[in-house]
Amino acid sequence: MRDRLRAVVRSKTVLVSGVVVSVAVPLVTLPRLPAVTWWPLVLGLVPWVVGKYVLCPLRWRALTDASLGRGWHLRAYAESELIGLLTPGHVGADVWRVARLHGTGMGHADAVLSVGADRFVGAVGLIAFVAFAGTSLPTRMLLVAVAVGAAAVLTVFVVRRLRPSLLPSRPLPRPRQLAHGLVLSLGYQLSIAGLLLGAVAATGHSISPMAALGAFGASQLAGAVPGPNGASPRDAALVVALAALGVPWAAAAAAVALKASLAWLPALTLGGVSLLLFRRAVRHSDHPGGAVAAS
Image 1: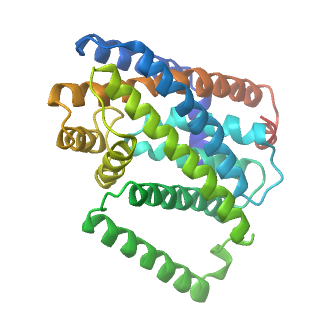
Image 2: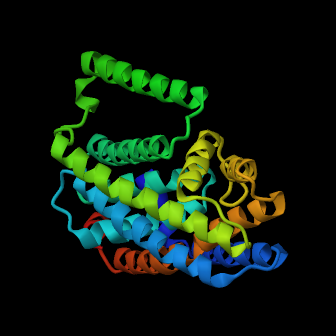
Image 3: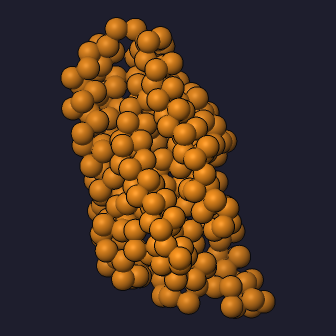
């Protein structure tokens, strides 16, 4: 998998295709939207960029037991976001982060633990915010969460008995690390609410911040079904949730499309530049693993 990802990074075809897709999505989507006011979008986009590209990488770093600097995590996370937007269900993002950690010399199991812990704390932060918003999570979502947790515990138990060498060698995140990560996750959830509020306000409508968090959280259940950014079941569920809050269907669809389109701008700028620098470092190094660790 690591070799395949390295081949993708070195491929000019993939790089050009990514740029074309990144530019095409907003160009195709935005002209079809009703008239919008741009200043609410800007006000919502700025804190979201800070949340996504600063708070989330710092959360990942807080949960990773490795001597890697903040800059490394900021760059690797930005790269993963661009790759995630190019893959259904955003699955490429986690695969890329695991590969980047593995490239620094970290064991594969430890890299998976790092990314998995980050995802777990992010999910806890989302659930906490949805609960704070006074929105009841769907029973199916709670059952899925419980089932996944039970399956994870069972898997660890079986692997420990049969193949202990496959388990991570590094210790699990300490309570203080988890608390630090949770605080950063809550900050990111606030930024998501800001972006969604800005997108809805841009269409001439409004909802309360708590309702925005509830709508976003309730739509996450559909995220189990993969799909392209802006046209996934999760996006469709968010449109339905906004409509249930009183936003007209056309405006709800426009707000979700704006939110999805805007995600490409920082991903292409921050992630694209970082990927170009990473690709250059790999090309000029005789030891690709060392280039991964240094970039």
